[in-house]
Amino acid sequence: MTMDKKSSERLAAGGREVGYLEGTAIVLGVCYGQCMILAGDDALMNVTIEKVNDIEAEKRRFAEAVENVRNQLKNATKEVQDVLAETDEGIFDMYESLLDDPSLHEKVNSFLDESMSLPSALCMAARSFQSSFQHIQDTYIRERILDVKDVLIRLMDDVRNAEPADDQEAIDSTMPVVLVARELFPSQFLSAPLRRVCGIICETGGATSHAAILARALRIPMMVNLHDIQNIVSAHDKVLVDCRAGLCFPRPSARLIKQYQLALNISRRSRQAPLGVLQAQVDDHPATMDGTALQLRGNITLFSELPAMHSVGIREIGLYRTEFMFLIRNSIPDEDTQYRVLKRLVDGADGAPIVIRALDIGGDKSLPYIQWGSELNPSLGWRGLRFLLTNPEIAHTHLRAILRNCVNSNVRLMFPMISDMSDIISIKALVKEAKDSLAAEGVPYGSPKIGMMVELPSAVLALESLLPEVDFVSIGTNDLVQYFFAVDRGNSRVTKWFQQCHPLVFKILHFICTTVAKFPGKDLEICGELAGNISALPALIGAGLRTFSMNPASIPNVRDYIRKLRLDDCEELYQRVSEANTAEQAQQILDDFAESMR
Ligand code: PEP
Ligand code: MG
Image 1 (tube, rainbow, N blue to C red):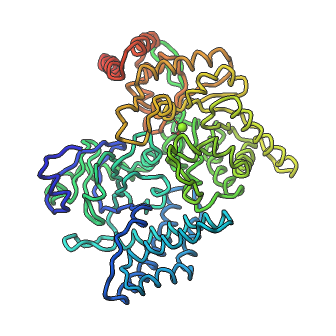
Image 2 (tube, helix red, strand yellow; image 1 turned 90 degrees about the vertical axis):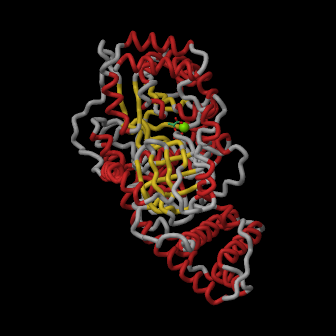
Image 3 (cartoon, rainbow, N blue to C red; image 1 turned 45 degrees about the vertical axis):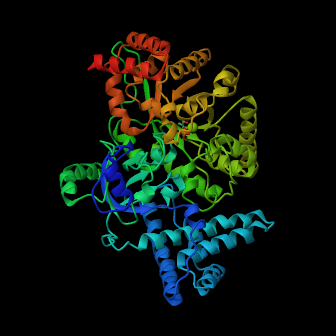
């Protein structure tokens, strides 16, 4: 972030003067809205305890906050259902019942009776529940502390977001909302009032983080790298965010808003534009000028992207991430719920091939309702396949729901985070168990092709021995780059080291292509964000990749570009890029090539 010192000081002081912050845009667009601060756990637990004189006034605030949160939950259920087909009624029921829980009311009121302010009483209640839950033997009940804390955070957020400071403008409950977070987690994002969210600004986060992938799927402009943003803006401050120029204007002047009016209208219209027509002409095998046919598929993070994918002429889904249906609920969805949710996708795909990826939870996508414990390195921890293999009952239900969707459909089943042969053997054993149990009960199921993601460096080295065990492989460059360079994909402080266009990445991709080519009939695709990167595209083709699965919005440009390329130029480009020493050199070679193609 850079800005002149004076405006930095004015902003940091919460003053009303206009200044700007520079950030890194990771989802393009322009937005203007009212800040909603997503505080998180530490804001609940680390409150300075204050005393007040008017106990009754604090009790009234508490009652109001409970009612406000109840109404927010009702609206959120409706909004989430409108925006995300992955959901269904009752996803917030558990919160509603906790809001009415007498022990929660007794606890908070007992601290209010000691003359504490409401934020202090909420904090003390959270601490007290935390210490009493710690001693409970029953894991299920012990883990409910997270739900209780979640409700207390919602109450705290309401108290904070309901109180404009004296110099703030009045709250406008119809105005679009800009989410302000230190680091936005998918679960927080999905429980925000999605219909009203027009933008996201964060202190940290990366372009391949899962919150960014979701924001892209929902077409919500997002900016990260805004140092200390949670202290610079307060709840209900207005903020204008220009993700094209990487600028964020807290408390913008009327003049500035006027200057931006046209851009704001265009950005809003493009978000509201219907996502597409189902019957667009299929155009998923573009060929290079010299006749090399490539295949394009769509990455679907949310069902709502399906029409968008169809509208750009793509029918095949190269990656469906199942985790979002888990993230928007308050507990693991049961088998029938998972079956129904996936069935909507399968029906929507209308017979086209779909790769359903088994639950890849953990890392930046921990489930809020499972006690994760503190992990020093969440991305290296209880994530993806490791979570499934250590929770065989969750895996069992999940696999049964997927297998039931494989009857008369074109579903393929893919596993994330495979590290070696024993992972494949273990997960295939769970697939067999799930099939056997369905067969024993006489429930119809199918036998999908089984695939693995290549996203761990160990899997790259082991690939030759793993290939006979699977039908297809898909390269997840987001994680491959993360694990290859040991660089957190979601941490903007180390973005400099998250180099997707590094010569070594192209070399590794070429190695994977040549390895898979030794096994005729095994399908290979690339589905990380790099697949939709226009400047990398010719070198990816030169490295040997032929099937690309990407965010639907990237398809038209990628397809047009493919038609201008020649295979021998791409191969020559790959050679030069892979011989470069640094990512900067490689990028320069790619940029020069792109320039020569204009
Ligand atoms: C990847 O890692 O590249 C990938 C496609 O999976 P995800 O982004 O969901 O981890
Ligand atoms: Mg991955």
